[in-house]
Amino acid sequence: MNDLIPPAPRPVDDFGAWLRGLLQPASLAELAALAVAVLVAWLFTRALRRALSMQHAPNSVLFGERLIDGALFPMVLLLLGYVARGVMVKFVPLAVFHVAIPVLVSLVVIRLGVKVLQVAFDGQPWVRLLERTISWVAWAAMVLWVSGLLPVVLAEMDQVTWKTGSSTLSLRTLVEGLLTASIVLIVALWISAAIEARLLRNAVGSELSLRKAVSNFTRALLMFVGLIVALSAVGIDLTALSVLGGAVGVGIGFGLQKLASNYVSGFVILAERSVRIGDNVRVDNFEGRITDINARYTLVRALNGRESIVPNETLITSRVENLSPVRGRVGQTVVLTVNYDSDIELVERLLLDAVRDRPRVLADPAPSVALSNFGADGLEFTLSYTIDDPENGQLNLRSDINRAILNALRAHHIDIPFPQRVVRVVGQGGGEGAAFSGS
Image (tube, rainbow, N blue to C red; front, side):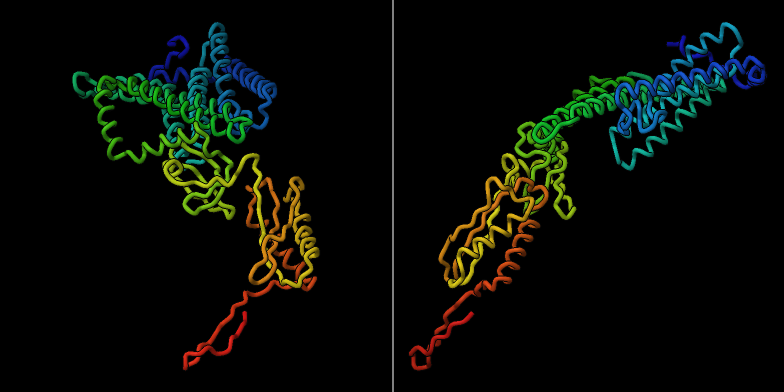
C-alpha cells in the first residue's frame, strides 16, 4: 500500500526545489502524460457507459448524471495517473505528479462519498452538509500532503493522548479511526444502495413489497456490520457491547417498545404482503393509495395530494379496509328513485346510456339496470357497473355518472319524487282533525 503513495516532499525548505522542477521543460512531458491519462479515462468511461446502457442513470454511483459526475471517471484517472507516474519517474524528475496524485486521490474520495450519500439519502437536507464536510476534509488533507506538512501534523497529533479504561488513545488514532469508520459506512451504504436498485428494478405490486422488505433488511444488516467494523477501527472494545446490548434491550422493552413495534410491524407487513404498495386503503377514516412502505411507517396519499404517515403498528393492530380487490376490479352501484308513472324502459335505457359513454366503465362485465324495489316514494332502480382503475379515483367517476343521469332525466321530463309524508292533526276535543300530505 505504501508503494502506491508517492513520497511527500519535505516541508517548506524543499518548496523552492519543487517549484524549480515545475518550471523545467521536463514538466511539459508530465503534463502531456497527465493529459493522455485524462483522455484515456474519459474514453474508457464513455465506452463502458454506452456498453452498459447507462446513458441516463442519475442514481448511479459510478456514472452519475454526466460522464465526469460519477466516481468511475476519477477512479480510472487515478489508476492511470499511477501508471503514468511509474513510467515517467524512469526518465525525468517528477514535479507535476507530486501534486496531481494527491489531487486525484482527493477527487476520488469526494466524488465517491458525495454520490453514495446522494443515492442512499436522496432528498435529505443534511446531505449537503456532509458533502461539504467531505470536500473540505479531502482538500485539506491534500494540501497537507503536497506541502509535506502531513507527517508533522500527524506527529503532533500523536502527542495528544488520554487514557480510556485500560487503553491509551491519541488524537491521531481517533482521527484515523473516524476516517476508517466513515469509509466503511460509505462502502456499506454503496453496497446496500446497489442491492436496493437491483432488487426494485422492474418490480410491481406484491413483488415490489417483497423486494422492498429484502432491501430494508439488507441495508439494516450492512449498516450493522459497518457499525461494528467502524467501532473496532476507532478502538472501542466490542466486548463492552454485551453489556450495552442488555441495556438497549431493556430500553426497547420499556421506553422504545412503540418504536421497536413499528419496525417489527414494517417487516411483517412487507413479508406477509397483507397490504402492498399501490393498494387503495382506508385507515382511521383516511382513504388513499399506499405510495411507500418504510421500516417504521407507511405513506398513504389521498387523491387531493394530502399524505398520511401511518405507523406500521397501526396497520397490524387496527382495522384496515383494502379498497383494491383482486385484479384491481371494483363494482359500483347507483340507486335512483323515480315517479310511479315513469316509463320503465326509458329509465333503464337512460341509466345504461349514462355509463356506456364512460371509458373507465368496463364492457365485460357489462353494466346492468334492475327495478330493485317499490319504494314508498316511487320506483327504485339500481345501476351496477365495474371499473378496473380505482387508483384514479372512484368518487369523481360516480359524480360524473350522477350528473349525466340527472341531465338525461331532466331532458325527458322524468321527475325524482320528493319524500311524501302524512301529518294528522289531533283536535282539542281528542278527535282527529284533517289529514294533510306533503313533501
